[in-house]
Image 1 (cartoon, rainbow, N blue to C red):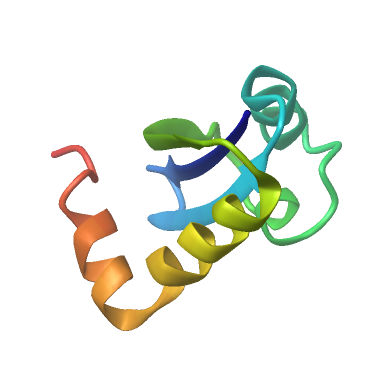
Image 2 (image 1 turned 120 degrees about the vertical axis):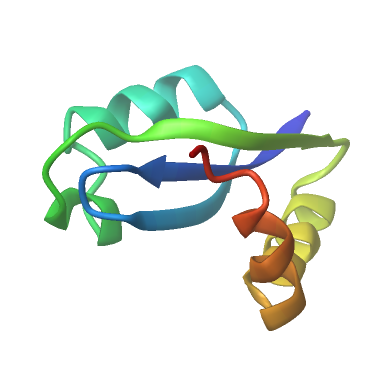
Length: 82
């Protein structure tokens, strides 16, 4: 089982879209800034605003790519709180 997820940093006003086999571990990595990359650059906490499970990594990668497209990002923005 693989999860495609969207996290939001309210302080920075940024979203991140990714996929993982262990969402709890990945959220901890994002919030402790041990996951090097885009999210490590921003102060504040990341909150999970969307998650979708898939059976395989290839399905998760395909869905991640869809969510990163223009139409996908418009869909994702509907989950941003307040």
